[in-house]
Image 1 (cartoon, rainbow, N blue to C red):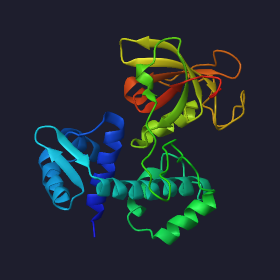
Image 2 (image 1 turned 90 degrees about the horizontal axis):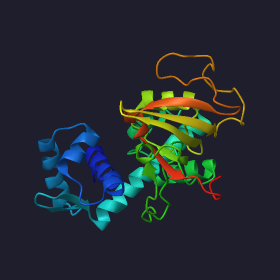
Image 3 (image 1 turned 120 degrees about the horizontal axis):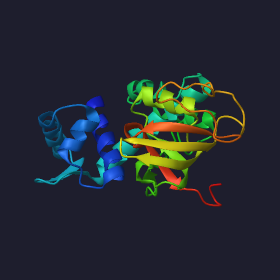
Image 4 (image 1 turned 120 degrees about the vertical axis):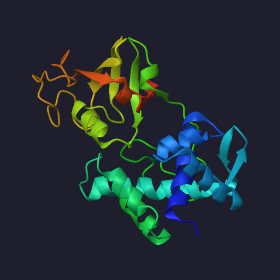
Length: 254
């Protein structure tokens, strides 16, 4: 039986493989889990002994087929729990990650099935991350890009947002930047700031003031007054913008 920590490592490696490609560097795993590189090396030794990762000297670690299956199961638990907490227990999307991190290791398959059924077998969690299927098929390839890679004038649709920082999530929710939101990149400055126009809000009808910050608010870093009816401009530090994954807006995503 694997420990909770081992499962956390496998989940982190899988996520990094999807974001950065395999093999995954020890330093990246350490940063993801907020531990030291020697701690990661020690854990990778244990995971390799169990046949859950393959390692190549000086290059990093890669999940084996068995390790990937474990990671997918933990991710399925985690993302279903996030969705259930948000939809049925009125948790804010900035609160669900930590709760799901605690619970994901301890639910039965029967409980998982009931949660999925109660939710209608969702394809994504509240942050837009794909939920693995019950048969734990590998997730489809990621065709998104970071918002920080967009250029002035680009019109993009938010696909997902990292769930790692609750303050960032609260800020983005106030600004209407959630999966499904349509953004126009207005300005990219050399001082680590992007200005975007939020042209569509997934959580409220166009032009609605529900859930919006005060349109007259001018405190630093907060959304400005709407640039036009149904839209508003938002200043995003690149540290936050880098946590947002987007796709170009097309007729299919409009």
